[in-house]
Length: 620
Image (cartoon, rainbow, N blue to C red; front, side, top):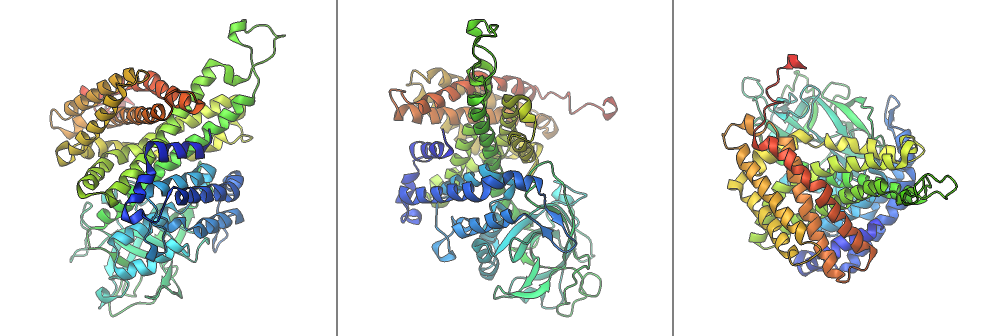
């Protein structure tokens, strides 16, 4: 079954995407316009991305002493993506956008992620521009967002530092006012930044005229000291090349210098950089009467976004979008591996049927897809990848509900997204990575070579458990904050939706047992949540946050699969088509092989098991 066939079912038969066209924002759209976008993106992905996925893996970015060199194929793909209008797909018409539902945008972008995730498809640029649309001034939107949406400029997010990693409260990049009158600058209060940022994707390249960095930094207090913790963090626009209030390049380079390229296991088609801000390599003329960082106006020029001290709140707007994007990237790598190993299994002859004894060398070989264990590995990949895709599209639909539904429905969608975002990021990044491992296994020894693409899919996917918030951070966020916020209302909302699906499934003979199992799993998760926090001691509650998240995620995916199965059954009452039988088989697999795992995970959560937390380091 092709990706397009799967998307059509999920979008139109399960999530009822056409209903969105009844809302004023999407009134000019129809199923035909949605399909046109999907067809365009499928074509560009097939022509400009997929044929070069191995090329960009082999021809890594390199620095020639002046600039970062990328293959011509990457330039061509980036240009084609920008010309498609997808960078501004969800924006207003007057911003040059298409006013597409985010759900359709996410579905369209899945083609690029599956074709070549490391060539990129503008995820950070869109997130950067969207953040400024929410938190920026009118001129910041006009100058920076609009040029990013057009593809003329690109964007990054600069959070981590070499010494701090994910611990943003420990960032040491400093920002000081750039002289007298710094607050009256047209593009925003003007500061000078000095510090180092690490792991910056697309931090240096020649794909666009300019790169717009969004940088977290701290403004020193009156004594010149940095405020500890996250309260002192502010957000700044730091362009690679200086621009004026008309959005024109001034010809002056900002003091942002490439300190090095990171050499990665995967995603080798994307530059990943260490950047130095304000090291003096590209000194910018001093502004106003202020002394700057060293008395000479030193430092990279940055323009404040929002209010001082609110940088992290602003940046999380971008990070939440990025986390759904990471989930889609992980999902589509899993899907790519599944499709590759399915094709291989259908064509690779090896072994004899067990039913015939399996020992008659004169008997003809069978294709490996006829072996039960290969079917198990393929069905696992299908359950992981297609289930994850359904989850990501469901979350994308919640984004549309949050922005365009009635106030009550929109608020419920907001809270459900808060609870589901850690799962949308973490679950595909763990289990679609497992799908990639199974794809290698299906290929046998060939899968471990570069002659087949599945080893690259695994390498590319291994990043997704790390970036945009590691697995442990997502788990702590889920159990330590998301399920507790607003007195647990988000968890209650999710529980109500899961229960509603189970109740509908009870009326279907093929699904009734799954419905009962899902309700038991929901009760187990609820009990474990209460037990984890029963002592009120965070260290005890969070000691096993990752097993909690694994169980929570599996319960959510079981719900997603049951809801998808209901749509399949209702659309094919005779259960006659291979597509319906395949979805029901994936549902059975998940309930028979996967959901029972939550018992072991939740046991250590409920008992607040301290095996790991209390082990002295000398025992290692």
